Length: 142
Length: 292
Image (tube, rainbow over all chains, first blue to last red; front, side, top):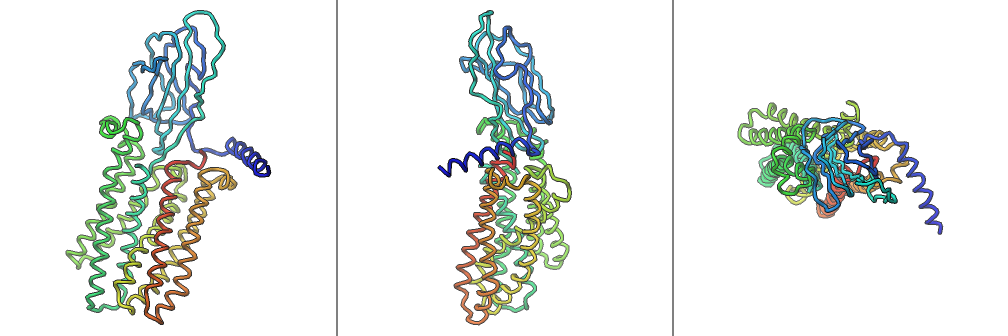
């Protein structure tokens, strides 16, 4: 049991440290639509805001049938902190956005988030999405 | 894949720096026309060329490999012109260009020395320039990008000192078999003298970098990055103990008994340790970040 206790303490400290470290790493700070948003109408744009300039290498919007929605994404060598893409009219259902960016240090970051589009005014229970922004894997290259 | 290329780059840089250090130590020895010595010098020069060539090939592959990994499109992504051009314009591109030029200078200078011994001094300056470019290339990507110029300088020193030590081990191991005992003893003693200097630089810079990158220091125990760093430190401690033992005991014994076998075996163990150190470093600089 001592091990469990130690683990608890260590993980608590780790969480605190994670929150306080002066981090060189970039986060996705805001998205429109927001993660887990419930929308009543098709969003006009897809927008991501990062905490520092990054290069968007890949961005995909996947519908409930696992089909990619085409919205004219193209990777670009220009780094920016904000990206905005006009969207076609979407049909109702669940959507998932997956992104891959490269930081200014050549460091790769990935993540995904989701939103839901309701065609009618019937509010359903909110489905917690398993995607979270903190699921960012890192790979660095030197 | 990325890990492999990174490890190979470390190994190539080390082997090149180590070979040149050994060549320098060899040239400081008495000029004797012993076929054994000459054969060793030829081997050393070839060893250097092999690694510089490998380093060059790997660095040319780097851009497609990185592009493929970045876009997660597999093989197609490796040759996607858009991805390649984005990679080229990013920090990765600058890094690759420095590595390519660095290894090219090494190859040219060594080839020149074998052909035109007259220009040795100038060509060695070219070699050193190559080393400096290679060391600079390490400062373009990864966690150390955020650091200021002073720390980038420390990182470069750390890498060059590491390379001088790590890269000398295999040639030293070979020399135990290839050289006559007297030359071997002087070579080992001379290496022992310069090694103290390199190892001091290596550790001083390493500690300063660690304090800068791992903030707060308790992250050493709580993060993957910290734990891998600790693992590296354990391997390095092992290397240091072995190196001290070689310097203080085995080389002294070698001078008396002329039996290089124990030293040769021990250097082999040290070489395995240095490979572990480089593998560990490849992992924690590629897969995990100080804050991830």
